[in-house]
Structures are given as structure tokens and as C-alpha cells.
Length: 135
Image (cartoon, rainbow, N blue to C red):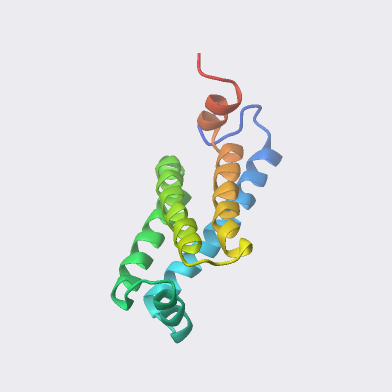
């Protein structure tokens, strides 16, 4: 019997590609969330410069790490991806509002694309839904 986390055609290469593509943004987001827990000066300065109070740094880190962990667990990966999409959408909105450059605005978009791309490769249910259409 095949697991739902196996790929459509059972390709081990596809599954591992999905895991690797998923791991890259997830690792970045976990480190970012952990940095919000530790609150080094650069994180505090950057957050305040973007218009947020210092008091929101820790809650943002907790939300980010929790959503990323949900994304990494196969049974809750789709929920995690949806929640991370919302978080990253907020990051884009913050960068636009603060008048940041193109790189700062597009970086969360690229992270989101990697999250969803990796998930499609590693989750058979989602791949079937998106790639084969709804029947």
C-alpha cells in the first residue's frame, strides 16, 4: 500500500526532490523564528525599523516556528503551508509598506513558492489535486 506522502508515480527521486526543496525554506524559517526568540540586536533594530513594537518579536517567532513545524509534519503539511502563506503575505505587505527594495519584497514570495513546490512534489494527494484536476 502506498503512503499519501509518496509521489504520484512512486518516484523516489521526486519524493526526495520535494523533501530537499521543502527543507530549504523550512530551515530558513526555523532559524528566523529562533532568532526572534533570542532577539539579538539586529532583529530588534530591523523589526522596529519596519514599524513593529519590540513586544511583538517573540510572538511572531512562536507563530513562525509553530507554522513551520506543522509544515514539516506530513499529516499537517498542507495546513502549515497555508498558515505560512499568510505569514509570508504579511512579510510582503510589511516590506511594501516600509518602502523596501525589490529583493526584500520578492524574497518571501520565493520562499512561499519553494514551500508549495516542495510540498507538491512530496505529497501525493496535493499533487493529484493540483496536477490532475478535480474530478
